[in-house]
Image 1 (cartoon, one colour):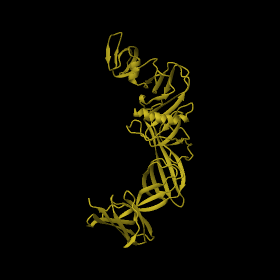
Image 2: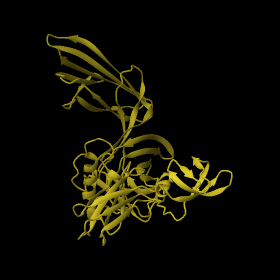
Image 3: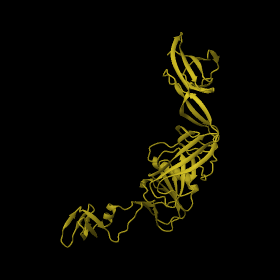
Amino acid sequence: MKKATVLLIVFLLLTVLLQAKEKLYIFNNFVVLVGDATPSTETFTIEAPINAKLEWQNFLATGLPQETQIAYKRKDDLESLYKKNLRKNIRFRFSWGEEKELYLISTTPVLKDMKSGAIYYKPEGYPIFPETEFSSVDKFILHFPKSPESRIFYSYVITNGGWNASYMIRFDEVSMITGYMSLNLDFDPGQRECYVVAADIPEPNINQVVRGLYKAEALNFAASPEGKSPDFIFYRLPVIPLEGGAKIAFLSEEITPIKRYVYRPSFLGSFTGVSIDYEIKNLPFDLPAGTVQLFDGDRYSGFTSITTHVKGEVLNLTNVAKSLEVTAKSKDAFIGKSYNALKYRRVYILKNTDSESHEVTISDVLPLGTIRYVLYVNGIEKELKINEGGDFEVTITVPDKGEVTITLEYSVPKS
């Protein structure tokens, strides 16, 4: 039932885009084929792409007359050819080169020489099927009680196809981001139009609940999305991809990144490099989820991954790399108690060996229920704001060739 629900939702969202031919919508781990037709007879055949893998239960259609029957015919293999010729004469070429006309008794196969009466059980060699129709694709055959009075719309899932996104970001005087679509189609798409789709939707074969789908944006391949929070992001491929693997650059834009040094304490007691993060505010384009390689000029500087971001959001690339010149360490210790609370002291030490000063953001969290806290920077009290969940950030300027000690004293209620 959930498989059918997923397919029906996708189908209903996409029918507005249909023309009089089939289209392929390539999701991350599956492909949805959508088509329409106006049958003029009481039998109508729909052929799947060559080498496509699918389950016949995935097929759905609307506009069908009641009592329409849908038959699924798999593409031919040796077993199906034997079935087609059961109780008929075929030719069989034995491994030693002799060829005979034999009667097919069973698809095992069991063959009989009608002249000599000899029985051959799974003989070595290969069969020859004269004047036997061969189908190289799976088919859906629709049998209508009467010809439909309007167009029918249909869709089904192909499981051996998908895509993923990858990006290269280069930080320089002019910083750039380039996005790539890596397509993997283990079937022949033929001449069908193809769309790549970024969407938060599970594979139909996975037993999960689909989040609400409210809006779809059909986009030209080179255009930027218009919606700020679309449930689907479409990219129309400018060419029909070939069977196999292919990579297409779909994005090349200037960006204005902000580099940040962020210390996320591990309380190991030894100095470690702080994280190097990058922030891109107010994205002017959509970014489907994918992996990111980063370069500082010509130097490789890190690898990370991102979730899908839509136009207008903030993109945070966290833990891209560790700094060698800006390091930090921290410790947390119990320092006493009162009649109703336990007291703790958390100490952060930031060190900078560079010849320039750097701002470092400490990103940490206090226990839920913290009732009192006070922050000192080199012994001077500073304002600190704690969020409802206990997390906080505080930005400290660490001078060149310098060191800063930050002390945070806090109390939690006795349990």
